[in-house]
Length: 71
Image (tube, one colour):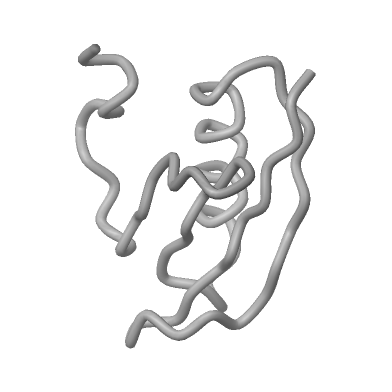
């Protein structure tokens, strides 16, 4: 299991909240964040980090496919 940090952002890209996630993979953590942000209208997007590595930045418009799925 890996530990991730997620910064929830508003429509202007400002960080409004912070979450910790424990997941088996980057894609599992990313799916968890899409579910959370999709159900919470207080946030427009998020940044998902593991340590100093940016996993994904979401601006609120979910793409059809995850960049992790394309690799």
